Length: 414
Ligand SMILES: [Mn+2]
Image 1 (cartoon, protein in one colour):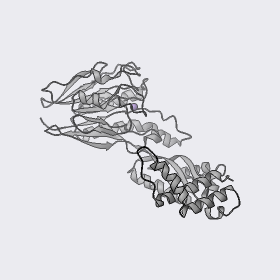
Image 2 (cartoon, helix red, strand yellow; image 1 turned 45 degrees about the horizontal axis):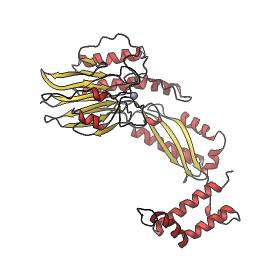
Image 3 (spheres, protein in one colour; image 1 turned 90 degrees about the horizontal axis):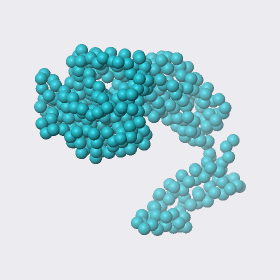
Image 4 (cartoon, helix red, strand yellow; image 1 turned 30 degrees about the vertical axis):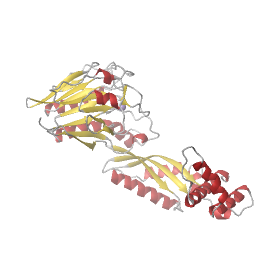
């Protein structure tokens, strides 16, 4: 068998509307609406530049069952470029773009194959030699509750390298609709060499070999929960049939979360500096891509009072957006204020009220308290399968943490 290389992509969601964004800047909005098209162009460029043998796409090419004309034409244009470069492509549809959705009659160029609602085999040939056999099935309709793996055939003994192409939910992943549910064991039993899956948007390799089971994730992040690099998987198959996978980023706008701790910050300008430093770091990490950032301010410090004033966070957001660099840009999509007030435990413990008394008692317990050690110890050792009693050091740490929690709970905010 001769070694070969293919690209596995899924969940392109071309022409995603990005409708959930709040008061987004015009250029940012346009860039985002363009981003799924650009990521797709990057996919086609990658296949051609790397001269791969073929491409497999595991569903959700389009974002909506009512596929936009623009998305369909762009997709067909990409397939034509592949075809002209002598690269074949194998495609299944998923829950976002099932076979019963609105679809213009598209004539596919040579070498581009779209699987229907019944599983079938397609053989990939290169220079007259069979290099792989692909079995795939499309979603006939949006809500597929059937385990589609059961309909796949075990390959014949003289088959070349075999690939299963499917949009499905393995192991009931709760973050995604439970369409075409199946288990890893179902996939193993079918005795294919590589399962090219789609549906779960976070990249993951469920199994490396015999068979390899891979979700490449989506190609362009679309909201804060799709943070970090997004792209496809490049698969190399050796003469012996060994599989080597490598992630290739294709996204053009990256979503990232950033956390700025205010505990060491005493003034507004220092806070702005700290945030800008974080945003600069994100820009570097994104390697020239634009970035949409969800920013969280956390920690306990003097800036809490200032940030808690009405309109302060909105003003900060407006200012950060106004001073952001032109290109590539880092757009702060929202700021979550999770900061806490600064509390001086020492002086607070001196006051003559309930919290003062509680803090004093906790402070004494931190010096070592036999009664506390006994009561907490029993929680651990008193069980059927008893655990070791906590050490004096652990008790001290927990008491210190409990003191902070009590102070926050009992201290009325100004
Ligand atoms: Mn999807």
